[in-house]
Image 1 (cartoon, rainbow, N blue to C red):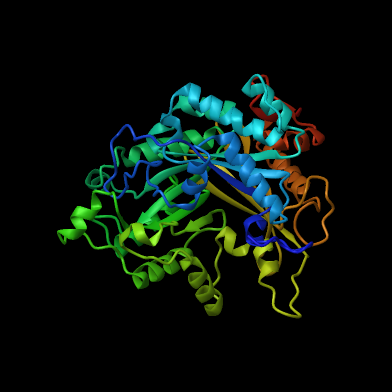
Image 2 (tube, one colour):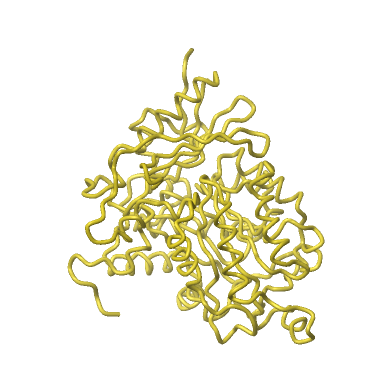
Length: 462
C-alpha cells in the first residue's frame, strides 16, 4: 500500500461518524441451533467465507484478538486516522454461545491491546482504558435474539458493552421455520425490551428476499418495524439474501425452488424502505462483502448503497435516516462554493418503545443535517441514556475542532437537556451506559460510576 501524504487521510469515510471502528473476529464455531438455510459452512466463523476481508485479516493472526487489534490500530495510523476513540465490534458468529472463559479472555485481550499493557483482570484492563491512548468509547457484540437472556446481558454489561446487534432477518415465524433460524418473533420482542431497559443501543440485521418472502411482504415488514413499539430498532443492517457456496440454499436454488432478488428489485425496494425510516434510526450498512467466487446467485455489487443515495439526493426526497443526514458526510459531499449552516436547533422526538418512552434529542440545522444526538429512555420510573454521539470527522481526545462537528460543546448541551427531561418526569437518578473510554468525560459532568461498576450515574434532589 502506498503511504498517504503528510496531511492526507486515506479512506476518510471510515471515521466520518466521529469514531474509529475496529472489528475483531472470534474463532470458528458452529451455532448451537444448527445452520440457517442461507448460511455458508466453510470452516471459518459462521456466515462468513474464507476470503471475506475480516476473515482474511483474522485468520492470518490465528484469530488472536490482541494481534487483530494491534494490526488494525497500525493500519489506521498509517492511513492518518485518529485512534484515540475506538468503537470495538466483536464479530464472527454468536459470541454469547462461546465458553465463558474464552469470552472473558477475548474481551480482556482487546482492552490489553488498546492499553498497550497486559492487566491481571478484566476489571483492571477496563480501569486502565479510561485514560489510555486508545480508548474504547463503544463496544458492540453481534449475537442472536434468543441469546439475549438476562444472564448474558449481565455479562455484556460487565465487559463494558454498549451496543448489541441481533440477527433478526425477518418478522415471520413461518419464514424462521423454513430457513431453520432457531428462534421466533417473540424472542426478538423480548430481546429488544431487555436490551433497551439495560441501556443498550439496539441494532437489527434484516434480510430481504428470504425463502417464502417477496418484495411486497418485505416492505410491509419494514413498516411493521417502525409502527409496532415492540421493535423500533436504533440501527439497521440490510442485506439481500444471496446464494453462497457452502449453504444449504444452494440445493434449493439448483432445483429451481428458490430465486434471489435481482439488482433492480433490491435497489427499488431499499430506495422505498429508506423513505420510511424514522429520524432515530441509522442504516449502518447495505450489502455484505461476499467475494464473487463464493457467490452462486445474487447481487455482486457491494456499493449498491452509493447508487441508492445518489438517486435519493437527485430526487430531493426528504430522508430522515441518520447516516444520510450526518455532518461528516455532508462536509465530504460539499460542492464548490457551497456552505453548511452552523445555526442549530434542538429537536426532540418522543415515541413509545418496548413498554417504555424514548426521547430522541438531536441538533440539526435548517437543512436537517445532523450534528449530534442523545437517546434517553424512561421506563418504570427509571431514566437511562442509551447513547450520546456527536458526529463529524473523528478528533483526538482534547483536540480543538477546526470544522463543524465534534468538540464544540454539543454533547454537554444534549446532556443538560436530558437531565432536564429526567427531572420533569420526577425521576431522581439518571444513568448512562458508557464505553469505559468515555467515563472521564462523564466524570467532568459530575457523574459517578455505580457500585456495580457498570453505569455512570447522577442523583437529583427535588
